[in-house]
Length: 516
Image 1 (cartoon, rainbow, N blue to C red):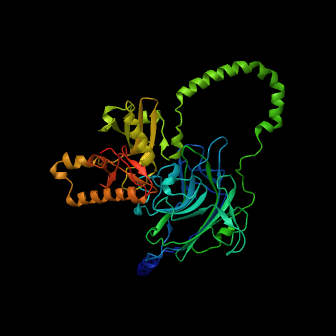
Image 2: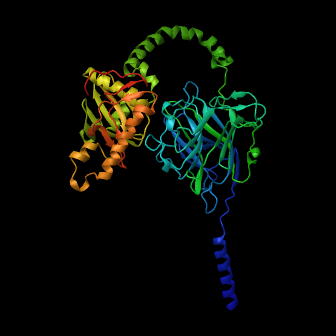
Image 3: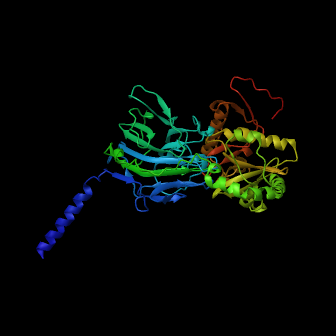
């Protein structure tokens, strides 16, 4: 009996000693076109197809994420110092035939799984209009973006960028590589979304991040595409999820990961990726109209086609005339700005047919409704077209707020035009309503404290400073009042309603004759 007790105590002692030892931070894995549901977890539209990770497909406004199944250690034990890491992967971004391509994907470190708090399109399935730039995100990513977004100050429509809690990149460069030695050579641009297979190397050590890009199978360039000093101590948590995130909008393309390696100790692990005999996703250059089958079919059926030509032509004319009436025409100025045009049918469904129960406010030219678009709560302002002033207000809001990006401005998500009846602007929904209600209509028990009032003033001042000095043009709001200051769920103040706003270049003397 005593020997059994002694043995049990020994086992307990060994177990306790093991608990006191530091957990090993070493991690290495290599996936060579052998992804499955065990070694990769997918979210949103991401799927594993024939052992290849497909983050998105031709679905519009989609999000796809894929993460390593368990968290990885990203900091030294009992320290805030980030661990080094080295990762390499082979990817392909391919367009779909007859469809315009967009938007991009990113390699990411995330604190949680799933796609909560993320938006599609230009947000790449990482952030949304509200949380982009929030230091509490604890997100680091390397983006591969094929759309130039003015709100994120993108350098062009084909770039690689370093993202720290925001899609406004900390550093970025045109996608490509340097030929020759490290201190010389010619730069060769690589088009990211032409369907070619590319290999990426991302190394982080001693607070320096290096990102290198080349065609799959080519020798790793001596000179990195991006090399920056970057302290991730305040960004990375002790353990993080690692993987990929992608998004499409009205523009779509496929984002595929063919192979992936990761290590925080072995910086040559990327050499183990297999770069030969990979599938190609490049669209064929030869047109179907040049194929032998097509030519033979035209020859045999030529007489039949000619005989039916007149009938088909008349039907097409009728159909086209009807179609042109049903489809909303694209305005010339619309293409210049980034907010998305949303169909009237989507808005009608989001507001339950503009029901009175969804009304949350009354503006000078119409009602404001609460609704849900793609699972996100939004506010929709309906502007009557009865007056010229209504049209001017609509154009002012789209052309000014549509390109502004600041945490103390109400975010404009999109817009819609219902023929000659009404115009609709879609905003972020502000949970705590307008400031005037908290000042004039609120019970004393929940009235704003002096600290909250001072914070509101600071928030509004911060927004005004951005309008005057922080953007490429100076924006005169001209209608700042309590009812145009909105409070989000954290009681942060945001300035809205740009219907009377005017813009002019810095240094230009503003001219306005109307008293506001």
